[in-house]
Image: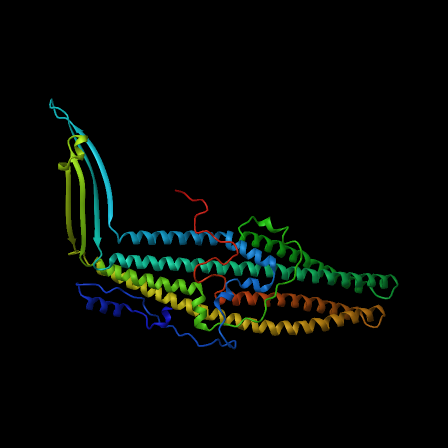
Length: 484
């Protein structure tokens, strides 16, 4: 990785290199090394050994949920953002081939037939056929630098495709976890509503018997309706999440309504993931690799702009046949050939060429800063995910203890109320506490799963460094509607 090779170019250092190179030759530019401080280990977790990057390629399989795996695979195949990134990669590779063609001779063919007549003179005919060839001698490396820039741009585009794949896989997993978590919260609300309805029935019986006042009955009814009011909110979230998942998988919003109607548990990832070291994580992150390749492309463009200030050598040649009659073209005397060598060099351009070099140096500086920002953001993402994972584990444990105690208190309060040993206010408080704690447990369990997803995303999981497909079905590197 470029971060391990030294310090970043500055415009002053680059200008010194240009001054020392003179006009005789141009030394090919190499990657501008970047100095980015990378810690040896993560501050939020103990790392015993690095994990294999291949274990993160299909991290969603670790949740052991077949439907989640199916949705992620489908999204990586059909999502519009993924398809757009694939098209951008095809374009970058095609433009790279265009740059590669600039290093080779160009050969063209032509043929013509002419008939001309002047005044009363007889008409004359002239026939020509031939080949024309030209070759720009890339002595100072302008075309080679252009090819290097195109290579780096294509690599950056491949990494950008990986970044999209990483993001889409995480979005699908987070949406699926939200769906399952909301379904769990809806089931909890339904269960508590049923319990509150039983309490309301008991209260109405006691009201008829004159054992309680109308105030108690109205309090019971208010608590029941408050719980009932949560149901449509949760149901709306479920429907909207289904729509979002359908669009992520490249389908109309209602396409997954039947598939995702059945209630399922919140998928939980195994806790046996061993983190890679920070430097290895940066190599796995597609956004960091894309930024690195953009630096390489910027370096090549500086070299290209520098070479444009130097002489340009070109060879042109032609070989053809020229005759007054079509049948005479096969005669050896009709052969015409020519060879031309030319050199051109800018003499005065008002400083445009030097200004172009400075512009490319400034672009290189921008790319370097972008790379540094990507590295820092990657480190922050992992640290944040680790902190959230640790905190939510502790939070879930405490909430589970609280929910168990709240359930016992609510059951005991109902029994005592039925026997007339406690007032209704105690029942209301215990039921409200039970609902809140159980709802918080469901939310915390979903948050814990989401933390795992964010950690996998922060580690750069969900794409292959070699550009291979991360799903079970291959994605062809061809347009869906090819045109000749």
